[in-house]
Image 1 (cartoon, one colour):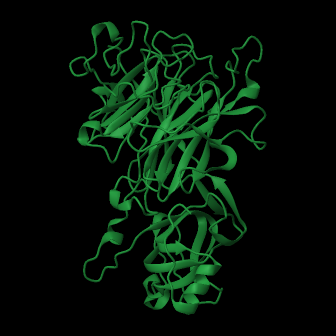
Image 2 (image 1 turned 90 degrees about the horizontal axis):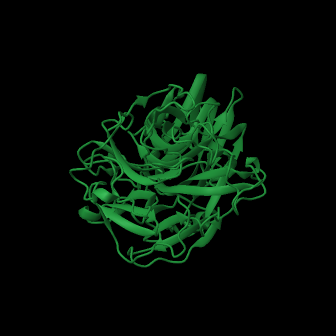
Image 3 (image 1 turned 60 degrees about the vertical axis):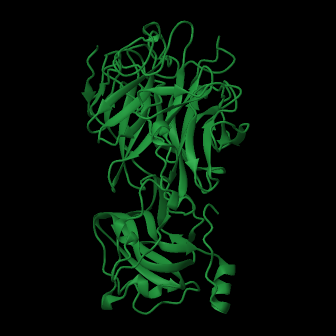
Length: 525
């Protein structure tokens, strides 16, 4: 078996074999059934202190406000919306074949190990996906192929390498579109894998032994991979972000409640006038995240492709990178800024040509780890020695931020019905930068004790800064009221706002003022 090497922040030379592995973890954040109907569904459970109901503690339900757009805001001055800055922290190279289209799925197993399933183009000259493999790691960074010859039941005639998990050969090629962890399945079917050739679902307890669901097609016209499944707690169904058909580079959704029957693909997104000329949407990894749904949209810059002597669709040359999309309900999706969140590296780097994020896994309460299929060369021109699984690190909530420079900026939320507990901000200042918070009524009247001057100034970086005001004033004192939160900051980045609140509008404010009628939570709306 070939040796697997792990490189961190090293630049591989074009054509040099290193070892690529792929990671995809369609980590459902809404894993807990108790959170299924709440806006709090996300990668992290509600923080321990918000769950406490012991003496002196206030039991709260967390809502997260991210800043993909200005819909939750009343005003913002001298701040700019900016995409996050994920940092590549490593690359894994699969020596038995090219993994440019590996679509890695990464999972943290019950025993603490990290495990990854992915495609590898064994015997392919241009990096195509031809065999489904598995690798294992202690930390999600340094990967080694996991020998399955004593565990995976694969006929010798259908096995092409030691760490293979699905049969391949004898004129049949099974490709993995994606794999994900199903929070509602029994243990023996905890993991699901979507394959094409044909488009069938598989189930597994350990990512090694897979069982095919016979005679069930998750899409009648098998699309070119990738396709990504996720649990939608609002619709109480599984969604698959896929292409409408083979070679059709747009994004559609398929839905199932039982993994036995599937809806026809419904178109939800295509390239628009703000995209680069001839850009095509190659695929979209999607996951529930803190009451939102976040998508990693792969953009193929087809305008740079060689247009002569091509197949019916543009194929050879052209870079790929990953943009940011989002949804409130998992079905209707929007773009954010039409610019790459994950940018291609410089010439010769492992992600210089193609960069396709297929997995996001929380490492701890502060950090997200992102896995992508990448290559040094452009689309369709990746020789066997090319292709990597690149690994990136991103701050929690670090998809997008509202940034203030040296001139003081201000962010004011729309009216919030404050149910109780304390306010928490994901914020980071730079240099001598500071931040303060003030609270007003929904109609803009200053609340005594909650002015900027009363607030203890913040300096530093925290994913959960809890503002403090003089005189022992706390947000719990405002429970049951309609308020606005105002953040004043300079040389700072604001990523998220959290607390037990409901975003409300004028009609809700009027009802609350007239007859004390509290608003109803409306997840996904």
